[in-house]
Image (tube, rainbow, N blue to C red; front, side):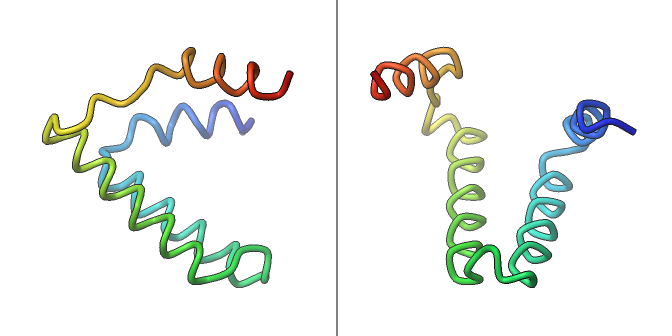
Length: 76
């Protein structure tokens, strides 16, 4: 299975399953000392808060194209 195939499969999962998978992956990465556990937990909590805000329509987010455009502009 390619990474692209795996990503496509994961994106078909319900949001709560995606969040659970992310938490497991972050936990696994944290076990190899690549990611600080506190940082991983903070990122997972922030991701859940943002997901809930978007579900509740409190936040509309930013289009990916706009995000990448800003990043490219900041790198020049």
